[in-house]
Length: 170
Image (cartoon, rainbow, N blue to C red; front, side, top):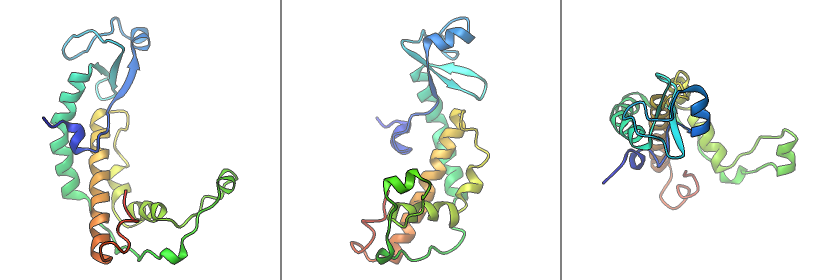
């Protein structure tokens, strides 16, 4: 049986909160949807301020995934043409340089990051998602996955298989 985690890259959603912390703010550590007692933790969702058990969280995620994936499919796009990737120009700062603030690099990862933020509508689509809500997290994951898919498709078109594609992937 497939789960919502199969379609959204195996991520877990909600904030897992230990029972002790829940008991400090709630009268009892039970799922606010099904009433089941929590074993070790509850999953907090800022949308409604509720704590869920894993099963109820998974049910909520399962119900949100199709609409989030539709949202992403309908809205995600390249906003301009991706520049070519130039392997001969690759460089990466050393860990010591990075620690001192030198964060500029030109690597496959930095290229893909720039592609996501500078050549798609990713930032515009994700800026208003509530990252503390399960809904916001599911939508964010769907948008990120779709943007990465669009970039990968574009790279596949630009570069013959085996030449560069294997280096530019998540």
